[in-house]
Image (tube, rainbow, N blue to C red; front, side, top):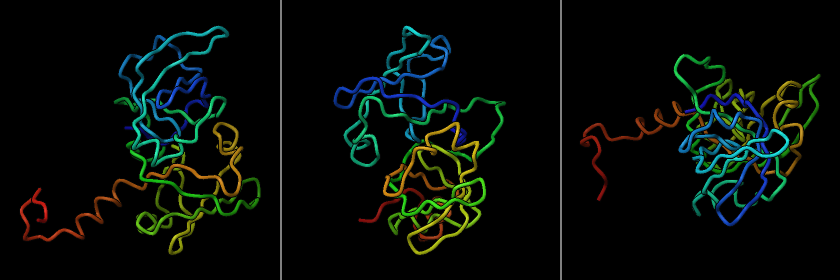
Length: 207
């Protein structure tokens, strides 16, 4: 479980098929084998941790073909910078919104327009995901918790403030770039409940 508040920007140090090694500034002694780390919004499991020269920490993750196909990870190459977040701990401040790290698909940046000191981004998303995005609601994009400004049938907009641009990869994003999207967990369950036949036994599947 995560909050969408990015705590480091890491770098893909190596890639071997579905195995990635990521360099970061987290203390190696604070990461245990099996720890969950959100990488551009994807919840991944650390399978190897080691310290590297220069003070960096390297951790490795194994990514399934399903995740490679449904997220931006399939296009990752050595040198790519990615947003990182450690999993939420009890008692920690919930500064964003509840994020699971289970990416729903891709959104694509359609426009970027300066808006005062901020930048207004507009995204295009598949209709089956767009219905979960609501004005003034929350959405996780590349792992970052953002507030939705306005919505259309398959488009929505957000403002990204200077601080977020500086401490995440959002300062590097350009029109046409794909990003990982996770819709709001509450919206997903509300839609599921609204579509459920109240006369069907819980857990039953259609034949």
